[in-house]
Image (cartoon, rainbow, N blue to C red; front, side, top):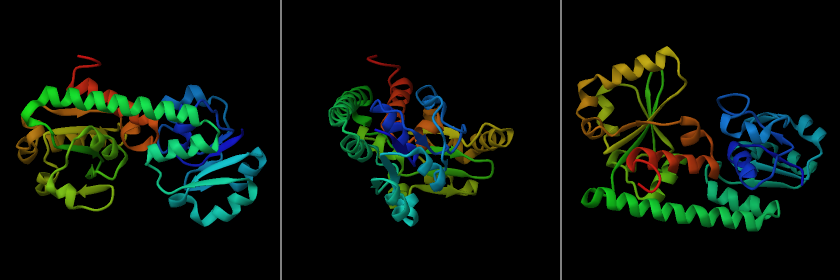
Length: 269
């Protein structure tokens, strides 16, 4: 089946299901495609941006199925459906829903069920190991921090990483629990207590010198140094592509890899 995927989580999911799309949209970073997906997508044509796919390029590919997002593509849904059957996912980051829907649409139900079963089993094992490792301190509170060149962004439970960490049993502080949306924007040092947590998972928005300077400035600030994670040596750098931008089950597995590596010392240790 020839399928065009119009958001990152759909592209990730197609690869996980063993399907090479006939067309994909550009990635948000590491353009034109995230490094972890490049081997599986070598030579696959691109049909523009996730926010503005080219209907002409899609039509030329003559797909049998388009996987789109209502959040991104509601305004062109009618035009897409004229090209071929179109599946519209409600959320771009609900990777388990994307897996189930695409498994059905691509007639890969068995593969989707196997991936979901393996996911559930791994999450259960990791949760047990985290409980055993931290004992009475479990569940740990967590913050997922994106270092920008001029501010700090803290991702909330509704974000992609937040959904994965919540399944493992992590919790958020009262500021994050009370906030709406997928992230908090922290623009001044006095607001740093809003991200206080037992564990920080941190990544930079790019790797330029401005981001590095911003992190150095943040991490040397007295308020940062008084937060729980820095005090306890629980500040861990991770890959922002997997943690926030990937949107699919392969990216979610990388989040589990990082939790295992940082907090448990590796698989089965």
